[in-house]
Length: 437
Image 1: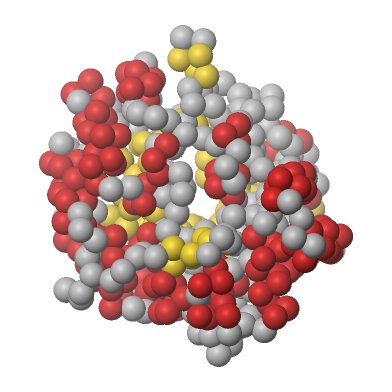
Image 2: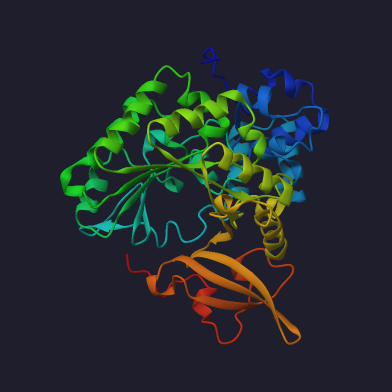
């Protein structure tokens, strides 16, 4: 086992202390300062020393994935923030201006605050979401940060210090009470942020109450994490890494399944010995690791990247799960690609992996009505159409039913599409007519 490294995060407040930052061209440093005033920025020594190829910056995919880019802000907003920073404007004015810009970027997409928050005895439950009957999402308050932030992150509103925008539960008492009244729930996804940022003692306080006999219907505990890529030492050399693995063993011994919903965006994240060791250790205690990430322009919009990612993942014993589409929030205009291109990339990559890699589904949009899979593109007479399927839906009757949209080579999201062949408009709108949880 490798020697325990020193963990040190870098944010906008101390990025000047990072040698790699100081070596960047002045205009790149300016981009980072201006954009990170609006969107959250955090990285660490492991990423900057082992994952980024600084000889190819700014085009390096991991640099694009973790460092703010000028194109993430509209030009007028970028110029506004740059001017304030150059003028050493009061921090209160910088924060006020940044907040106004953020609120134009759809901080909570897919009806998260409008439709997904469940109630118990007439009270809305903070830190929970229940969109699909079988699965409840749980946001422990001590896990609402990450070892590093993905620059496109659709949960960026969790990290900007605005309490009204956060999903966060102080403990699991209300979750337990809610689950007792909802025996249809088989899966609890502990998410964030990143629950693996917490010490094991804190994570145990949230999870162990779920293992009581009254919640026997909860069969799977999912842990949504990017730590496997951004700080794999969490599972290998951190002071409580062994304790964390014992917690996972405890969950499994209770008769539940532990699924690590591992966020891998690029095969380079699997290239280091410690990243591979983290996978080995998690699998050794009985955890299943499922790989998922969105397709992102400047990072992984190339079928060869996905092919290598899935092949390497299968070799290491993981299960390719989802290729998502970048959500319609934050700086999505910089990162999004047309749905038609995403489908083409998926098909090319999918056709070059074995059957073990074809567990993956994509491209998939986690939209307001549900998880919509782009199943194909067909031509009927002289017209082309998208074939779409709900993998999950607010209305369970929608699941598995194919429907059609007119082919649009420029569309980047479900709401850009127009129904074809009499497909229900509800499949393409906000889905507000079916909110029954």
